Length: 403
Image 1 (cartoon, rainbow, N blue to C red):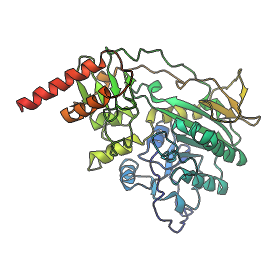
Image 2: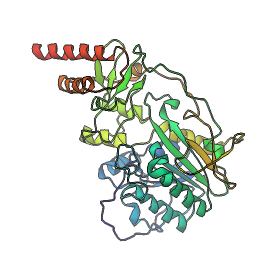
Image 3: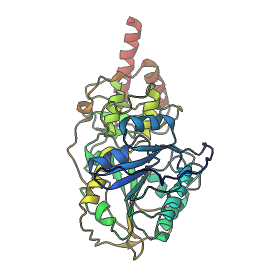
Image 4: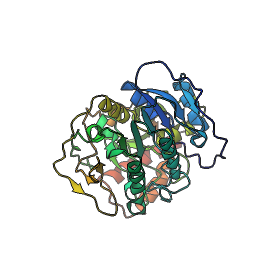
């Protein structure tokens, strides 16, 4: 979801009419706010090919040039005059800063998230058969649901049927608790046959079971932990401390570690080393925190190529206010659908076994600060967690004395 770019000065609009489309086979995709290419990599695995990627952040563009060397890279969506001819799908993980619970929740008209207007501008000029949008689930609630209302209303005015669903990355075998809204819109096509036909249901888990590795954010502790059982909490582009930081993992046998950046790439479904062209690890963490999980996009692309048959037996008209976690409008009104965030359920690998590269122990300073915040809070903690935290703190103190 990177590529806010509200701070970039408006440049003269430039035309892509002279750009020659790539001649490889496969449906043509344009990625707006492409970040480091999570959606586009997933779609490519399903047979799609990107003809243009647009991204304002220089570090993200550096990754895109490295990983998509044959694809045209564009800097600012506001200078894009029109989509390349023959575009069949526009993908846009548009900026979430104004829609996220962690942000300022300025809403869809905020300086960054308001850049979705550029997507609609381009669609008004040259409508495409498919549009895929991605953002944080809080957009369903922010501003009393008006952000989502604005998005779907504009799609409807452009003649698109639409369907959306909150999807959890864990459904695809990634040990990262990461829920995102994926909205698919089609002209003369049925997006519900893609997003709403599969349902596996979320598995029941015991969040307090410390016999499995559990993830949390050591930068928190006052109001929450970001706790995740057998998974890490959502990777973030920033934290309460400002800079992006990795989550912590409480291992089953004791000890608290931070995952290697290469495992963070894998937690998003990228190959290890996807962002290795960047010199600073902090840059890599920020971009990964804003990225889209690759297997989710791959599943959507595969379903686009081989849709099912949506049969809704529980249509419920939508009222005013916050939006449900899944809904659609195929031309006969807006309807809610009672679906989970798990369309499929791939084999789950335990978090500690997923880690391929040596993790780093959570430092004495980080552990001590987190411990003090937790002890001063009124949080309900998993039984045994504080004792594990104290044990790790003692271990790090002994190590410092020996050093």
